[in-house]
Each structure stands twice: as C-alpha cells, then as structure tokens.
Image (cartoon, rainbow, N blue to C red; front, top):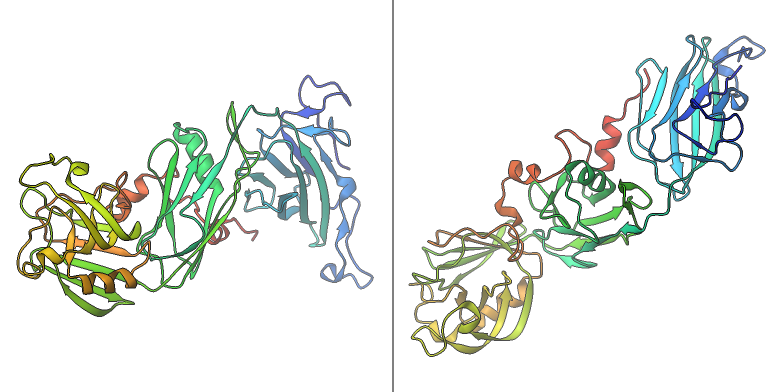
Length: 425
C-alpha cells in the first residue's frame, strides 16, 4: 500500500501548497509481476499508479512549492526505481540524480513557478518485474513583479569562427549562486559539437566561446530555459527568443607589425600576403586577437575622435575606403593610398593597419563579421578582452573559465549532462 504524507502542521485535505514534493512508491506490494510461464521478464509493466502519492495534502488542481526539491522514494527495500523523467508542458526536462541502489531520485535543477509538470516513474520489484506510473502536478508561487529576460547576440546570420555569443540580461545579477542559476539555464549547442563556457563580463552581460575558435561551417544555437525559474526573491526568468547562427570558412588574418606584413589564411591554407603599415611610435597598434565588428565601404576618420587636437602636426580628417573595423574606438584595416611607399617597410599610421586600395578592396571582400584578425610583434598593448570589441580570445582557457559562475565539472551542455547523469546498475 502507498501512504500519504502531509507536511507538519498542514490540515489534512486543506493545504494547497506543500513544503516538499514527495512521490512515494510502494514497489511490488501485492503484485507478483509474473506471467503465466513464471518469467518476470516476459510480463508487461504493471500499473503502479495506486502506489504513488503526491504530497498527500495536495488535491486535484492543487499547487506544489516550486522552490522545494522534487523527490521520488521507493518504500519497499526489496524493490527499486529504475528511471524517472519529469518534464514541463513545453518539454523542458528537470535534471535529477538517481541513487545507485535505486532507492531514491531527487531533482537537481529548480522547478518553474506556475507550471504543469508530468513525472514518469519506472520501477521493478524484487522479482525483476517492471512497474510504471505517470503523475501530473502544477507548481504555485507568486507572480513576480520583475521578469529576467535574456537577449542573445549577435543576431541571426553567418559569421566568422571568432564570433562570441552574447547574452544581455534585463536586470543585474550579482550574487554568484544566482548567476549559476542563470548560467545553467543558458544552453548552447553546436554542430559539429564543441565544448565551451560562458564568461560573466559584468552583472548584465555574458559572452560564450569555445576553447578554440568555432569549427568552419558550423551551426550554433543558444536558448534559455529560464522562464518561470526563481533567480532571487524579486526575480524569475522570463521568456527569451532563441538564436541560431552559422559560421563560414575559417578565415584568420595575421599582421606581423615588425615585418610589416599581413598574411591571410582560409581553412588553414595561406591565400595572400599583403604589405602593410601599422602604428608608429606613440600610436602603436594593439597586439592580440580581435574580431571583425563591421565593414564600412566609406568612413570619415578624424583625429579629434581619438584625442588628437585639431591643427596639431598629427591631426587628420580623411575619407577612407574599404574600412574593416576591429575595435569600437576606431581601429581599422583600410585603404591608405597616402602611405603606399611605406607599406611593407615601416610603420607610419596612427594605429590602423593600412594597405593599398587594391589590397584593401580584396581584404574587404574576403572577410566577414566574426573573422579573426590577429596582430603580433607590435610595441602596443594587448587588446583588452571586453569593452572595445571582441578581445575574448586574449584570455587563455583557464582565465576564461574562471569567469563562469559554475564550478569546474558542472555539465554545461546537453551532451555533458547526459554523460554525467547517474544510471541505474
């Protein structure tokens, strides 16, 4: 027989919210589970519905507390639970752990407020006969005054292999434990599959990248399972639109400032070398990895925008063609017809990478947003990771992972979660 357990102090049949969701399964009580030939493996699973109670004080249409764990317990010491799945109405699974002896299962991810769940439980008795049951319930919880929405970037389209994913939150999340709730709900999947990690840029923004660049011609999707999930006392997750992007060829452009040469690689093969000029002393080009932010067919460049006083010996005001932007502060790779004689020989620019109009047009037509542009052997500082474009790749993998709110070893994607899910033995 199953038993109904009410939370302490709850009036029988009156309380509509339980402090703990408890499914109690009586395994094999009065059920032999054997077929006519006595082989327990040849029988159909018996219906265990009358052996499962759901926090007995909850009546049909009642509510369970979403902030308490979901538990499934086997009452009979000679029987065991073999599998539990819990999903909401939209198909989102509740992660959980099953004890090695099959005596207990408990949820490891939070339940959403005001959501209907269906729990499917598989069991077997001491003779190995299978049992099964399906139970549905709804969760309660207050309607929060603020919903935490997530806006994913960069926007649908095709990008280079260096393009990070971004997640902008509608409200700040400062506490590490609360950040972990948010981060665990943001799922990234790619084909071909790669492992990656989120990094908290600030209280409202996260970036995601793999250890190395994305594969060429990959499909990358990101979505949030945060809707209805409690983040803190004033915040619950809101609805967010998923995003899918694709990557093109693996295009990497490497500028050697000391050699005054730009080398472009496509799918790991060198396709062109271009003589260039980079930043002169006092205006050195930033070292490190940058990512193409935009392409501008014609852009007006003025020295006053980078702090050079108008009328000084270093001032300029030029219309520049075929400008490929790599920082928001104004670093480009662009046509520089005025410095053709210096290109390939000396560095005379104010920080940009200059090349001939013909080479600049070729480069402009070859690269796309998200392609990798790397500068080495410059006397300049290294590109900052955030705030002036995508310098994400200038953090090594350990530094990048340190910006995650999840502890090392926490599953970060569906494949990893599946591998780490406890299995019955």
